[in-house]
Image (tube, rainbow, N blue to C red; front, side):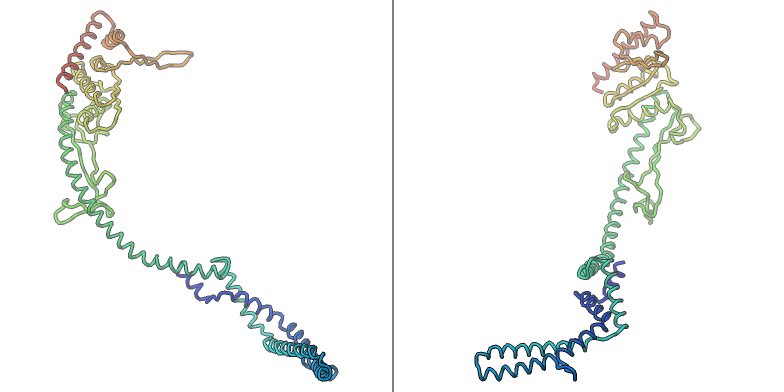
Length: 395
């Protein structure tokens, strides 16, 4: 586009002020016949006598000759004679200029068309590039400078591409180092999660962190993946690794993606195991566990409760449970119930105190009775012993 504009303006060979000259010429060409007739009549009166009448210069010359003779007799007329002589000179000059002007006049339709065409060209350029020819010329200077920048941008792009290639190589090395560390951490995480799953009555469950990659022509050149070959791997802000958690809950089923195989309760226990394994690194402030007690008994419930309480020392943990051994570990205990009011179901949440908490735990065990109350009190006492021992050990 810039090249086209430059060519269009340069081919016009613009001259500052030419538009006014062309307009004047167009006026003369368009009115050549009238101008020639009027000028010829004026010249005839001024300096071209006819048999019928003398010209103004002839008459003025006679008058000047007479005044000159008079001034010889009466010197007082000398100034008037000089003025008349000056007037005759001025009139003669005017006649000369008028004669020259008449010689420039011509009836030339072809030239008139050329002038009209040129004026149209100038008008089009003004409409496209500015309000006047001076602005068009200034625009030409501007776009020439812009074109120079565009032409030089190729070199700039090449330089940027070289820098980009260098950065991609550097990122590739960083991604490879990160991937190596991530693989080491993944192995440690797998062991830690399986240990926690064993405590959560999922003794035969296997957990594995799968780290994969995918090639991409726009990816990072990561060294060390293949001998003699550094494939480009797809990447994002987290590197080139594509991480997936695999789980086998029952022997012989094989490792499969956790999101496709685990049940609701298993998922909660898996998340509990993961969160405990990652407690020091996890930045999520609040964790919610629902139905984590599904499929477990009271003994395992104590273990799960202990793990949740340990996790609650570094996070805010919310747990929805029907297992008293689990609920007893909560630092705060709430009862959630439903009532009907005005034809609508209303959910009520109430915080339990020491006495009402025992009643709630007893209700979780079955019918509230002295025996179930004693059991609830025993559960709370056992939990307090566990908490006290953990705190005393500084864990």
